[in-house]
Image (cartoon, rainbow, N blue to C red; front, side, top):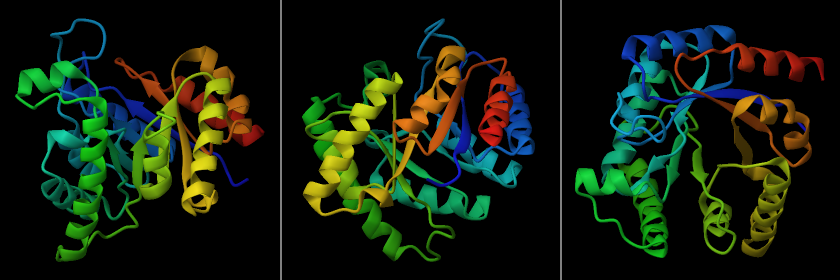
Amino acid sequence: MGAIRIGVQLQPQHTSMADLRDAWQRADTLGVDSIWVWDHFYPLYGDPDGAHFEGWSIIAGMAADTRTAKLGAMVSCNTYRNPDLLADMARTVDHISGGRLYLGLGSGWFERDYVEYGYPFTTGPGRQAALVESLGRITARFAKLNPPPLGPMPIMLGASGERVGLRIVAEHADAWNTFGLPELYAHKNAVLTDWCVKVGRDPATIERTVLIMGDEQLGQWRDYVAAGAEHIIVGVDHPFDLEPVERLMGAVRAG
């Protein structure tokens, strides 16, 4: 097992851009391995009409305003943007960052985003099929872009469905993200490994990441590592107190 990586997800709701920017600068200075936002158009909890900012615009700002942390959306909703355009956006942001971008993708789930912004909200299987189609288009567009992406730009897929979602991860992803208690994470991780074997993929070539929330899950970090997590990402809401992230970094260093 290699070194455990630590990241932070800054949730872009109920906040100001000044506070978000301060938070990502502090996180980068702290030395986190990665900084993330989510890709929604409205808050996921609290006041449903509270302040909220668009994810890819934030990532572009972070790319220019940080120096060492890897960056990404955890994860972008596939059907919010034309996949060829998304590939070009990701390539451009990757260059702004100096090659530090993850391209995070998922099939989407937050119905209000679709309804309010005029996107068709299809069935779950339909959204998963669209994700697979988009992955092919994104890869093809990368090969045509001049210049190409600067960094390795791993594709992270967020998924937990055992019959389809984790199979798509095994077939297409460089990194995988999900959430839940350590026991559930261990089970999903094992299912992903099984899918890798079935599709002829080396399971070790997929980075295993997990999103954790709150002190209880933070205190279970060793259980997540035992369950297979290589990269632990701490979700932080406004006012963006990074003390839990710093505490986890210290605990991981101490073993």
